Image 1 (spheres, rainbow, N blue to C red):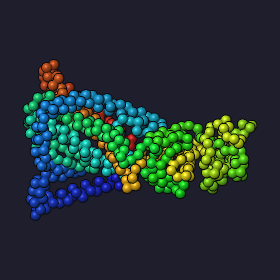
Image 2: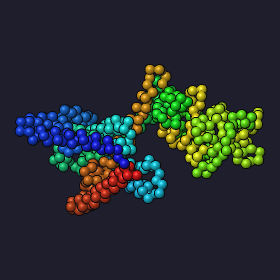
Image 3: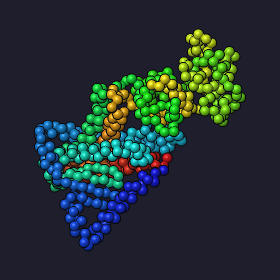
Image 4: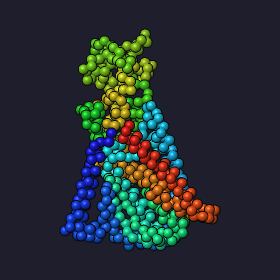
Length: 494
């Protein structure tokens, strides 16, 4: 379900704003002053929509559009080619996403949403509240870069530029440029294509730049941060199984997950995922220690079929299983930390024969999908985690960057990295969505100009060309609407 605060907050703000706007416009004494103020400042208010337009940047757009005409011609010609290709690619991506969504809906046990190419993002539902600043900032920057593309391309093609503005629709920010429509209609279809495709082209370039920064970040931060020496803990969820006096803390450097080496955050996730699909790791314990640490207890079977032999009230003891000389499973209750903290890992007794004393491979007898995981970090005492491995991934936040100096904050690389990821995904998504031949999107005008440029000699009647464009737009609009509606249902209802 959608959190109530995520819905009532923006709705309440918009209702208050719209009521205040209506009251001022209805006031005999304030109406003229208020409407004059709105006009002079380029502000307009409508239900769930507020926009601001200005001519302050017109001179800047004029300079950019007249700078190096040949270079800009080449640049926007590339953008035109990209835009035409992206129209077809975006349709294929939406079709594939729709089939993936339908498959997830039909499946009895749906897999994770991240298997879909495109996903609907709802703040407060599948977007963490803590990351909304990244999300909205990336959307606004992507929108501004998109509109700068349209504006500069329009000036390059001698289309009059009236103004630039920003808006907020419900909670989503955006930008727009005001172009003189009659000029747009007078230029050739190829020129129109350069203007209409410039937005998605600039979004694509912005996404590429964000990707380049992501891959180059270790090099850029090399004078200030180490990498490749482990995964540095930046945050541990409070009251999670990974917290506590013997858990992980911010600043701990994770080196191993069991016997799996960790040199980066990617290694951490890979190690934890491997543990979740492999059988529970065992530990080599010599027979004398096994007898010394064991406590009395009768083994009994849990509901899931696994065995338990410790008191349910014990916080430090775990039931372990092993096979002796007779190869019959035996169970013993051990103090987990004393038993395994410095023990070698194993899967069978033969793995422990390297010891100088007789040893057995002892495995925790835990519930299905649960694992006992030993994590070696900068503290001399290992962290022992028992639970589902996925919970460990959710409970611990890590980074690849270890500060070289004490005054450097752990979060600086994370902020840059997270923002680049949002910019990459949102600018890329804006390029894909706007390229879809759909009513009211850039794709509508891109398709119209493309058909005029390619079919005017084959289909002489403009009415017939418009009819072909209408059916393509109808299909693209239905495809996009289906993805949005089903995507929202997947996010909010399931």
